[in-house]
Length: 310
Image (spheres, rainbow, N blue to C red):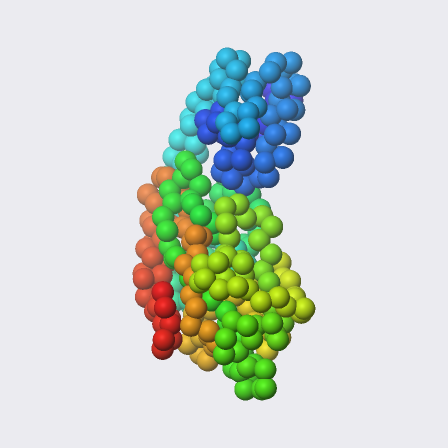
């Protein structure tokens, strides 16, 4: 028991249940390579072949299925016990929330004072480290997931959908190289978010161009950022044109620090999801926070400039 490879057991259970290394990687918040390495290490540890790998689908061997079923039963029992313990003692002196940095800076922080005002007895702590499932890792009580779907085996509900469109500082439209047509983007620095960890099809500049039916002009000036809040701030400062995600730029658009130079909007495949363990909403402060988040999301106005499509 002292040397039992617990992370590898979780990986095997997910691969067996989902019949896919890629889907298991998405659920566990790992890369596909990491999941494969975990399963391979478990096979070496047991001396048995546990998964037959296939191009489109992977299947557990009888040994792998037996072990995966035992792991699933154990995880379920542990989850029930832990949820019961948390519910009995969690009068919750604070709520730990994990979310992407851009969402934290541009959407959550500006609104959090409203929750603090209504519920001063429930402090909310924010973490922006979400490389893995932060709830299962014990780093958060709830988290905001940015992606195409909510993770399996947890309570997940869509908080905010997403539309994307170019945004820039008003000053960029006042000089001789303004932006009146998509072709004019070639004359400006293009600010790019990196989506290296995202599976599915994240909303890139190429995605926006395809969805709006235009040819994306080549640009000789590109600036890349690892976080969306950095590209948004660079756009506010007049450093170039960013691809704005509606929930993250809505406040800046309403304040006038950003403008939408082209009436071309694409609907993203991604969304922001509220995620927590299934029984966490039985805990009153967590339910209060969830209900507040939903109300704030419903209050968000839809930005529709004159002449813009949907």
